[in-house]
Image (cartoon, rainbow, N blue to C red; front, side, top):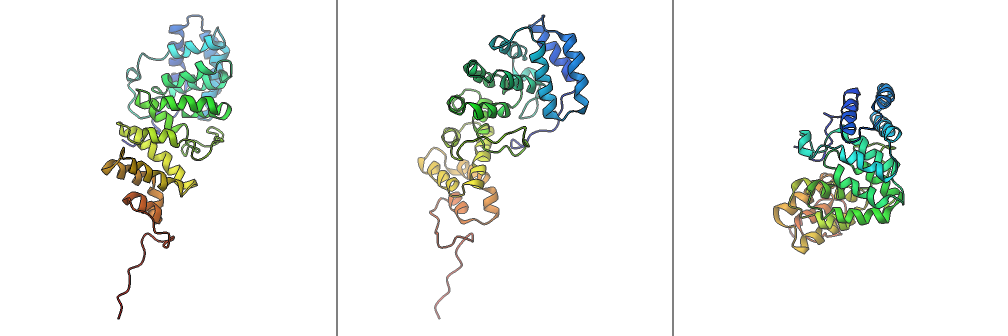
Length: 288
């Protein structure tokens, strides 16, 4: 299974899935105005791109739920199936069916007043659909408070929550175009404390996203990535084949370019700066 790519098998929000959202929300909130929701939301969908479909659905929830503010947060969360396994999800990211609920939280409850409760929601919703996009909006508006939450996520018992800690703090999200995935105004090294916590994670799924994040660092801050990998190796926490896989995945593009620091980081030796443009110094000539 490819943990580094988003599955396209569930890449839509359509009338059938809207009907399922209606059933699940109505089951926990009988006062939910299902008729008005169904009359307005599905009619707009055919002409909209996916990101707009998600936003339109979350707007429909905002318009038709009988409560507002933090009380409205409980309804989308309680309407989720009891566990992610109950959805029969077979890919890494979950079902787009559940993305409007996370969008609803980030779009309408991303306020200082409701921040603590809203930032707790991703740990619940990320098992049903990947929520790094909604988290990025929190990072844009409340960077300090959100990074504190992210730090706690990196030590969560759930591996999908730990994966979220790494993915949400990547400066770009290669699979999600702007403006759906706005770049966050954080330093390139802002996520390194999280990656340090996760670099020896027991779950390969999590370590794969650590490598992806470090690959972004290697692209934008070339000297920072190999130096960080070397420190991780020297710490003794991640070594041997596990380190080799992590470093090789993180530096894959740089290794293809023959960049010496990338090879140095992978092999564990100090880069000889006399050879900046090739993978290894030329062979010495024997004296005649």
